[in-house]
Image (cartoon, each protein chain N blue to C red):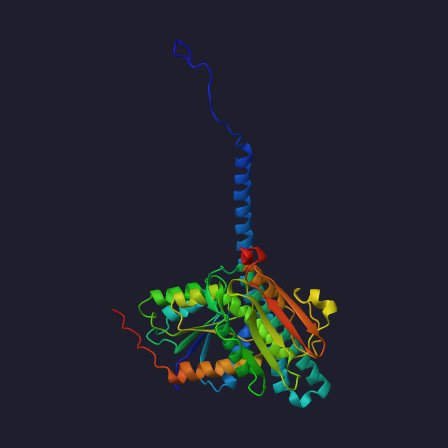
Length: 149
Length: 265
């Protein structure tokens, strides 16, 4: 298992607590970085604002992205990630409440790698998180971060 | 014309178009209103899909967390109450999903094309068998039932009808579900028949109402939205749905995809 971080973009503290709990129960040991809105997520990834001094040559292994976020929403975050040469190959998993067709179509349209709906039943949610961890943290190989020119 | 070349009288056709203009304006207005209502419904559904599920996830998740982390200090009654909270949260999540599915039936574009209802039914049954592999159900689907309709909507309709048949035969020893058709291709009546719990014909008119249920939740789970979806779907096709049943003997659902006028035309 890689020791790279998981970036969890989630504005609801209760959902954050449940996701962190599920990750722990699924034996995911990677550090989890939390961003509570779209701006924070992009600040972290692009080394801006509070993360000005972060080494941006290190990207998270995977981004778990909620869609409905304050300020900059998930779709906009996704577009910004794909528009930036350094982050455009970063794996992004949309992890959200809705399975409305428009959300799915827009997410994939903007270049999401995966779309997972959070089940209400925690036992199912745990199973989903376990599978996500297994796939994105162990099975999947990520593209190297492009060098800054 | 007279001898000086002046017109003696005029011949013409005149129409008072005030009424027609008013009608067009009214139509344009109502179209705008419909579009506005539609946009509002979209926004409402978006909010429901996103915002209403999050609190339920908390109720379920944290109840489960207490059950796991504090099992030692919980008395059996307390643990039971937490399980009730989880069940209720999950039931409400199903209600929200079904209501969204129901509104999707009205919101979605109607895209008619050739559909094979036999294939749709077989796929629906396959999904049900995956969910309950322990069930032994005899399923008979007439082959080659092709028609014209919206494949996505008809998939939802058959999922609901066959899902009901599947559910209400769960306590029947030799469960049997049939999906057949009667009449010529252009005026067909489709029939979903089961030998399950059935229903009292006295309440047949309540079957298709939203949230109306004829069975106790303890007997058969459900949200009471499925048949309302079926009715909307067949009506969007111009057809109708009706049912016959006998308590303890089974139910039979009939539907058409065209109106009587279309069929006789």
